[in-house]
Amino acid sequence: MPTWVWFTAAVVFAMAGVALLATDTAQRSARNRERRRWAALRGWQFAESDQVLPTRWSHGFLAAQSGGVARDVVAGSTFTADGRRQVYVFDHESGGKAGAVLVAVRCRQQYEVVVELWLPSVPVPQESGLDLLGPVGSRYAFVTQLSAARQLITPDLVEAAEEVGDDVTVVWLEKEWVLAAAPSNASPSRLERLLRDVGEIADLIDPVDEEEREQQRTHALTVDQEDERIFRPSSQS
Image (tube, rainbow, N blue to C red; front, side, top):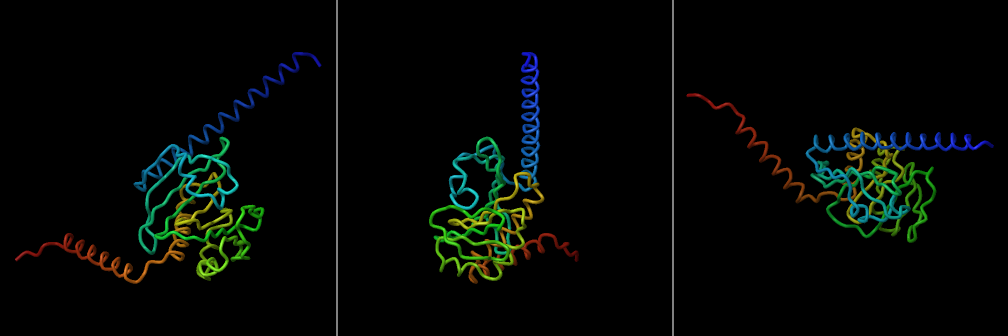
């Protein structure tokens, strides 16, 4: 084959590689701007990257990932039915490619049991120490402690897990966090809905006790009374 053919082919492949790189960079920049705007609208913090954050967890989506870095990290807190909870949202990047957007909502206490709820279309996790508990709605539960997991997986939790959506491959409880793995192209509106769903699961696993709930009601009533006093038109004699 003539040399010029090889040269032409090499040029074509190089141009294709540059085009793919440019497209990936453009998409990455667009996601970065979108995530940054979302964080600003919510009054949350934003960071370009964080190498330590993914090391907080080792189960669920992260069990099959070696290393990796968090990109376009959003950190803040959001209200759930049981009060305010700390949250993280970030792209998990491994080998220069984002595999998923991870959403994490914090509970008030740490749990010894790990509970993973996987879609049936996903290969069975190969983590050591996990046992198959069985179907939980349309998902399959893999856990570290069968008896403790059975106490947590109530009918209400099964219903809440069903609401997460079949674009989320896994939802899992690890330490004091409930996490979910969404597609890497998930939009802020999709992530907002997922945060609400994961927050509901956190409320079911980690409910507020009656004393704390009463304190929240009292605080809310006090705030309402203060607002009424401040905004009530003054009477004129």
